[in-house]
Image 1 (cartoon, rainbow, N blue to C red):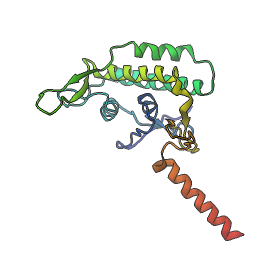
Image 2 (cartoon, rainbow, N blue to C red):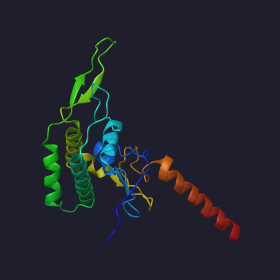
Image 3 (cartoon, rainbow, N blue to C red):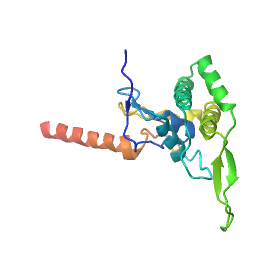
Length: 204
C-alpha cells in the first residue's frame, strides 16, 4: 500500500502553471517519485486560495475552510489532473471525473466587487463570496472546463524533469518550453548538463 504524500514546508506553493486549474493541480507535487502533499490541512487550503488571489474579502482575514472543504478540494484536484492528462494524451475522459468537475463548476462563483472605501483615484477590485472556499473551487473547476475544452489545451505541457510533475501552459513564442520554470527545473537541468560535460571532458 503506497504511503501518504509527505507535507511540504509551508512556504512552497508553485504558481507557475499559467492557469488557476494547473496551479491547483500543482498542490500535489512530485507525482512520479515521492508525492508531496501541499494541502495537508484546511489551513493550507485557505492559504492557497488567498495566495492564488481567489479571495480578497472585505475583512482581510483568512478564508474559513472545513475538513469537508479540504476533502472536496483534493477530490477535485485529482479529477482535474486526470482529465487534463487524458486530454493531453487524446484519451477518453473518466465519466466520474468529468461529473465531479461539472458539479464543482456549477456552484456559485466568486463575485468581483469594488472595495470600500471608494477614496482612491480608481476603485479597488476584490473577489468575494458568501462561502469563499467552495466559490474558489468553483472558479478552479470552471477554469479547468474552459482550458480542457478550449484551444489552449494543445499548449499544456508537463515539465521534462524526471523528478517533477508540474503541468504548465506553454506561452513561449516558439512553443518549445521544456521546463516548468527556468528558476526551478530548467536551471537544475543546465547545471547537471554542465557537470556531465565536464566529467566527459576530464576522462577523454
